[in-house]
Length: 510
Image (cartoon, rainbow, N blue to C red; front, side, top):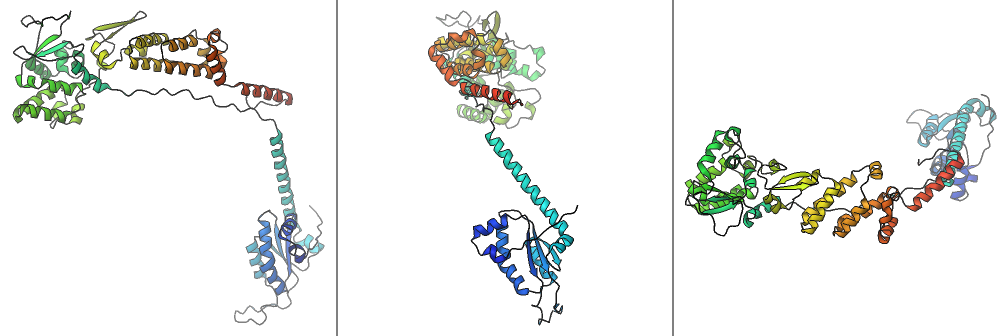
């Protein structure tokens, strides 16, 4: 490639004698900067190095322009290379000094006999051409970026879909499992077993389902398990040595009792154990996690270390799990917890020891009155019921003021609706508006508020359903105000689609 270059020199004073902004503008408008000096003029070189180079560096901080440092002429008086000789050192500029300046500047260094068209073309025309091409490419790229930026700024942008409003947060209620069961022992409601001493005096009343949930000894005693089902013979021996179930033939029936099915009567054969039975039942009903407290209570009552140890060993035998009791030595709370499962899950939805059955649209659910009274979680079967069944249950809970059960039903309905996909929601025969009106009528404020937000959030689905017309004016206004997507977005989306179709380009939204 052959090109001809011409050089136009500019005096340093012409550039830097004016104000700084003018100097910077002059330097920034150049494609290439060539700093030249005579190799025989050391004074000029030093002035360039000390005065002009720093100013050029400062100007180049605002732009990117290639720099060439050119040493012009042939040295007349070459300096002595002896380090001790200084007589002629200032007469001319050495090559090493020129290279050092170029290095500090980050520039290209060249030496020419003269700075005219011939030497420029011959010696660094290729370098100059390269820099020129790079500069032109950079300017072209900057112009292209600026043009694209302007086009993007004036281009019609698609509408931004705002986020739907957050649904109200339904706060859950903390469980009172242990305290509820412990209170059940004090209130003596729905008891189905009574413990008697050997002289037939009543000691305490309790509940079979609670006792059987913690011990195989009580399962044997109340025929939940047979001796053949229990593989540990010590469990059978404990049940036989401590308790005896009597049908009441030889026991006096309490006067004035109106109970159609009186509690089962159990005789406690061990008199020392019987004296501590109330404390032991408190321990069991409170979750069997306060072993140290049980020890202290029995010690205070018996005031005899041997008797205390005897009773505690009996308690360990009652709570025994096969294969684990043999390793128990100190009877700590942590170890006692590991011996058995205090959960009532074994008796959930089974007829074992059940004394009440719920019929829900033809389905039967066995339950236990003691647990229902203690926990108010009557509807354990709700987790297998439909939304309509849960709503029916919620109505009953509101009627009898079982607030925790009402809250559980609300939570179930919300969970089921949230898990329903849009396609199913659009085709289901379930009337959400009907649920809303029932929730309002039965004072379920949390559920009714949530259902209104649910309808508003799924506006495009519910607005096409006939039931949407059943909303009151107040409800319709609320839904229209909180609807998603909003009217503004749909309008913007329509305008953007029209623009896209008119431009015959691909839609960035759809």
